[in-house]
Image: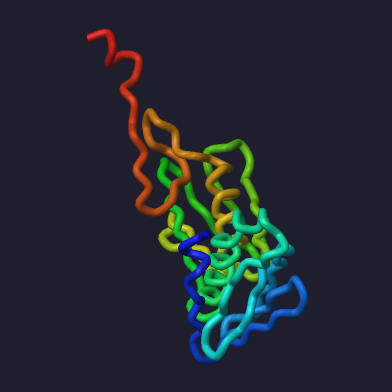
Length: 180
């Protein structure tokens, strides 16, 4: 039994949850999100709470009980408040700009690196080196931010690269430091 899966998901005012077979749809002020549910997981809306329960006919569904409860909770948070992720670009000449549906990165390559911005995600750039991505879908937002970070991850010797806001990069001593 999942302790997290047994907790009901509270529904704020203005959020509507519909369960149609194995599809859960959450609608709110910031949009609408869908999630496919595995067989063996029962989702019910009771008043102002969503209850995620296990079906007794599928004994191996317990592995996903807490997962689907958390996914539904993230959907409810996303359509009410939304999510935000920040990236910092550290390096001489590193900068970013939003050009239509593309994020243009100048990260020390011989050519500009462009990343397509998915639908439902808003990106803005502050001070040419801080990227702020917002959206209602936590999974899509996290995947987009991870894709941008993977273009130039922080390197351990000088710390240059793209990192999450507040991420600590442990620096290594260079080759000359070990000779002393």
